[in-house]
Amino acid sequence: MNREIIRSERSAKIRSAARSTFIYIILTIWAVVVLFPFYWMVLTSVKDYASYNSEYIPKFITLTPTLENYASAFTAVPLARYFLNTVIFTVITTALMLIVIIPAAFAFSRLQFKGRDTVFALFLALMMIPYELVVITNYTTITDLGLRNTFTGLILPSVTSVFYIYLLKENFSQIPDELYYAAKVDGTRDLKYLFKVMIPICRPTVITITILKVIECWNSYVWPRLVTDDQNYFLVSNGIQEIRENGFGRENIPAMMAAVVVISAPLIVIFLIFRKKIMEGVAQGGTKG
Image (cartoon, rainbow, N blue to C red; front, top):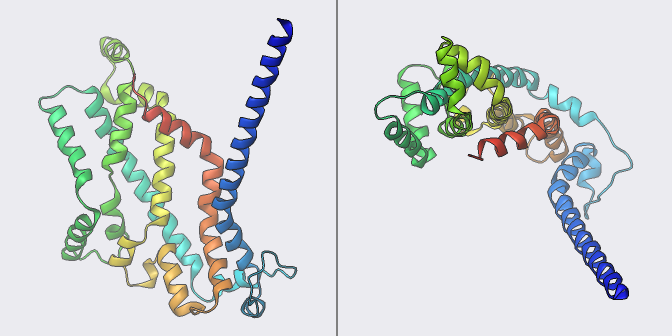
């Protein structure tokens, strides 16, 4: 009897070890597939232009790395200015968006007013509108207002998001109503309750939304490309195209990759630092009960 139990336990351990090994192998392969483009981007960026062009068969390592391409990224075009423009655009847009979506999510989740659920349903229906239609409408409006080639024209269409309001509203709705009623009995105003109770409780989701908005603004391409044709207002996403067309030229791939690495580095660092907060916030916002 004891032998059978030992055999059963041994078989279970072997199956568990085999399953774990298989999972790790799959995850390792997947990690290599996902990370390889980043490795190739960095590798190409440190290759000399002549040596890169002489490679008939691509090499997966270089013995003579160079940082010349990175220096060229800041001299061929005003990349530093693009960085500053992007930082201004990202910070102001994200701050304004938080000012808009936090009270909106609070109103939909906690306040009682006639037609609240209907209004929220219609609000969610806006997510069904194709992005192309919104871009056309926004472009016409911004052009008619004379706001092309201005930070105002860049920022205004991005100061709200139906999805982020929905995500934060669902998160706010998880907070027990008893806290709100107790605060009202104590004479606490709605705004004070929002900032002293709801936001601290839902901080992971607020942080997640902030980071996602920063990434969205940093990667924004279509809208800035439409409303700006003045270099003084180019963002880094536009700068990539400018570098390709008027900077290094289409054939200088190593210099292009160096510029892409420089532009991508801030987002990668932000994600690595706040990755746990992002996962926690998405999980908390998507779970109701």
